[in-house]
Length: 123
Image 1 (cartoon, rainbow, N blue to C red):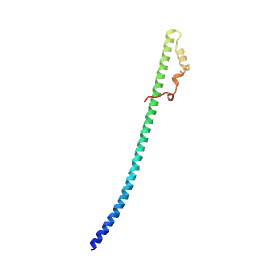
Image 2: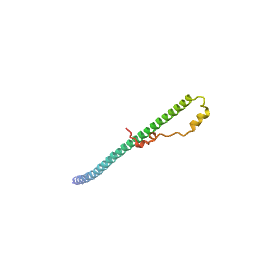
Image 3: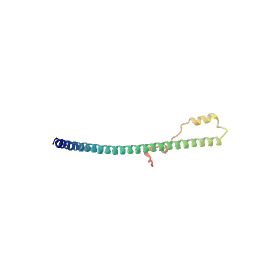
Image 4: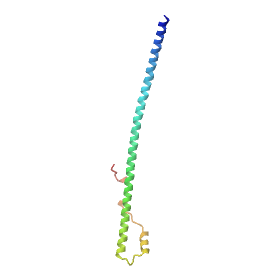
């Protein structure tokens, strides 16, 4: 008979352990749920940050390209003016006249100096 009593106690312990295992499994499932939500929100924030970085990079590239174009146009304009002056009166154009011409301040064009923040960037 002691064997029957021992098997009954063993069954009671197994039932109690199964109940504890269910609680532990439920806690693990809830933690996994919160972890999945956290991961999803983290990926969403990462995607938004990458998008903002790409937009900022596009804006900076636009600004750089605009500045390079402005510099090229100014340089070409200056070169054409100097060439035209030299061609119109080569006897009066000397090295000192050239250096005086280069020291004069350049007038900035009104439309060319607008900031890229006022312009739309197409991505």
